[in-house]
Length: 88
Image 1: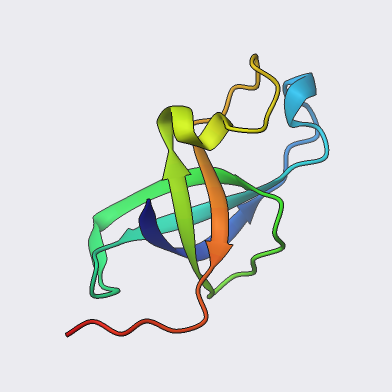
Image 2 (image 1 turned 120 degrees about the vertical axis):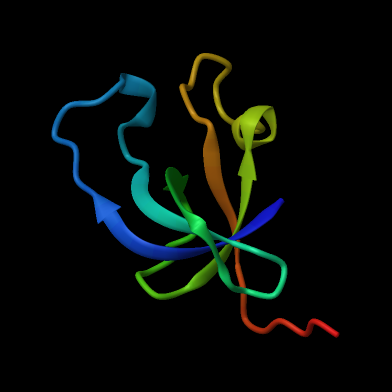
């Protein structure tokens, strides 16, 4: 799992059939203290309803495809919306 901040959305009128109905978000990856890491951006699917400005938890790679049909072309997925963080 990684932390990321939602910085935008993607609108795609044509996409792989397995992605139809999934919201696509542009995310900026964060370090464990919540700071942006070298400007790394990625696109992830979201079924939780995260919005721009929110901090989210993401799964990448094979973990992002859990509970999706096997042929779904997904490399990143929002798996949680962060309410608070406490790093010491």
